[in-house]
Length: 569
Image 1 (cartoon, rainbow, N blue to C red):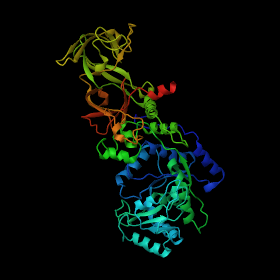
Image 2: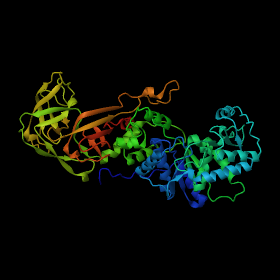
Image 3: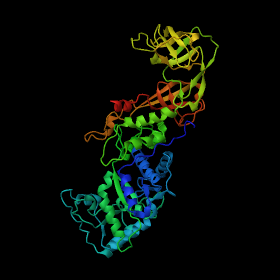
């Protein structure tokens, strides 16, 4: 198995959604079929919350030998871009899923939706309103007070049809008129108070061009698109629970006078994913991108799937995370440490171990021959014997981590200091004899002696030391840039403070770029997104910016696992 090959995760356990689907199957609904859908809006890149929904919807399709559609809700041309469409397709496939047939678009159904809107007008269930959006919102009322009916609510069918056709033909300006459903302005459900069905937008659509200047609202599009596609189970997040009566009302109206359909989508809601130290709003993520606070949607500090991919997260780790989070009926907040734990667990099994020194200081073995090179055998992954071993060069001059040496070390500092002994991993036991500082008072070189009888694998001395350090050859190692990423926000709920801007909680140390790093020569031909464990430092992956002449590595996560420690308490 190559180090970039993904492994499958265990089949998800049952949850309340599975129970409802199994109940429908037992009762023979939908002819025994199961067809779900993932319906993103192409107005931004997908984030980890969408990943949970992807895993849930496509996982249901796999579990019940059904299918899952990918449908783009492209009903607002002012915010949508082809770039977002392509990124979403890439993310779904990268996670390991394939949708049923060709991808679909709400815009595929614009003609049908228009016909249904006309049907509602003819049946007295929809009307054209000349009021502004602000005036309509002001008339909505409150959850405890009924709304006020529009003065245009009782227009004749003929007048409404005429005005709607003129809206369709582009005779009116944006915001001048809307089409509203005629339901109940006194309904306790605010979404049933004559919601807007169509608005005027004079902007070219990325798929339909200039064919339309009126576009259906999401609430008028969503349920009908599910119906058109024959979706059996419409899995939505909890905020859409109050929309369900409206979706059912629209379907009742368009099906009036029609035979009972073989399939009618059933909506089931689940709690969306909320992570601490993270913002999950696409509007806020877009703001971070547009203001240059991050370096694009795929910045490794972003919670986007593309950002997580670039940081070194694997599809298997994200699917594992989605499974362990589970499906709940109530909103909750998940600790981001669980996500980090999942990628550690996956990479621990599969990531090759390599030596890298990210803050180097030179170490000279004064009793080692100057021109001698020994090739030391190193295990690639102790968790996977099939990965075998490699040879790494050992020379007189090496680099070790600067913080692995102290001039006056405390008693429990089990690394290198004057007169102290440590083992160089896969090498020899060495003893510090002296060191040299530069004009700034910084340690510049460390002078040690090595014991030739203590070579790793052939040590017959029985000598024991408490510290083991990683290292690279000064003459054979390769220069590299290492980007140390940390959480983007310092507050657990950066968007939860009503009196403060979420950007006030940005972590100034979320990115630290080190340009003087050294890595072992086996990494010469690495490819983008190859992943490794840098011994004692953490898990890293190759950034797409990397070239053979300028290696760039991103830290995925440190070795320290806070989630595992929390769960053991």
